[in-house]
Length: 265
Image (cartoon, rainbow, N blue to C red; front, top):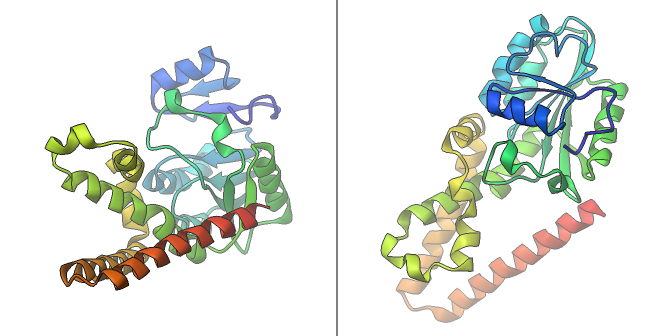
């Protein structure tokens, strides 16, 4: 949607025939199919925007799907395994990793919103083989959809999103799981905002948890240690220290927010 009207030709491939029909009916894309067929043969830029394990399968199939030179970019939530797989692509491909730092807990074309990219950071992960042409094309795409490019390596990306995205999903899911249904009448905006990520499709998140396991386990370990500290302070009635720890958490949240805005500016 965000790219519509800015490409010589915009095509879409989705295994969901209803999504394909809707995309064509709404004129979101110029052409669409449930199978790649001819649509990838003449593409200058191929974007793989699927769950991570499907991206890996598509990278393996890409040499047979696209016989000509093309820039290949992915939108997966983890980068190390994807960039490793990209290194095996034939030389005619010019690959790099990408991850728009925005999203919803819902999926499907009916949930799509082109404005979601506006003002968002967009991680770009080059390979050693990534050319200046692919870098320029990626930055142009990011600017076009209203986002801000952040170049980094795959390990840095995966470590950071483990803390800012993947752990929050697990925390939200755990909180939703532990909340008794009898509390529903008193579940208001606080509960809704802190558990929003819990309804993200588990099938998609399982790919993320598998492919970024070590970094997520590190973040999960730090989180559990801090929860244990909070539990101990509450158990022992050490309210002055508890207040100090809570204040420190609020201050760190403010620092992160200010830092994120600084990166964008």
